[in-house]
Image 1 (cartoon, one colour):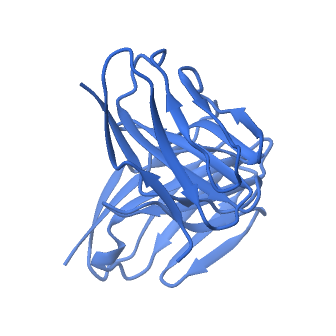
Image 2: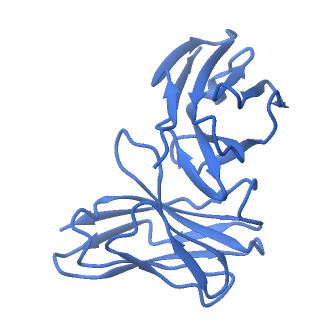
Length: 113
Length: 110
């Protein structure tokens, strides 16, 4: 079955620690995205990538970093510079960047210890 | 950051009743408007991507209309069933960057 796999499902971060959230897709999609959800708010775009070795900042990129070395993978690192990392993180992919429906993973919930 | 608003925030519907709710978005620089359904403990699922003014799309008992000139879209659920219970998200597509509304939570009671 084609889809998007996010891991882990739950993640805990200590103060001053970087953590990396995994996102893998086998849909052969070119574009991939990371969103953050906070209570009562819509999904907010952190980073997106239209193609391998290229990515762009979204609306709330500060304190996050990404890489896109393979088409299938788009890991998100939450750095210690992100002062409020507790949130639900969703990864998505689509065939192209514009006017294409996005397919989502099941999400990772990150909490601070 | 663009302002995408959904109303109401939540609604309760009796099984068998029909309902509708709204997504408002900026009417300038329009590329597309997306609708997603997000059931509890699942991942968001794409319903529609709408691109043309006057567009009307249908998927089973769910349909959507689009007015790009005035900046709104309606989602309709006909004959609501308990499995329609979910949060419905709309998103304004600004050249691939989606701006999501906060969603309308629909609860269908038997």
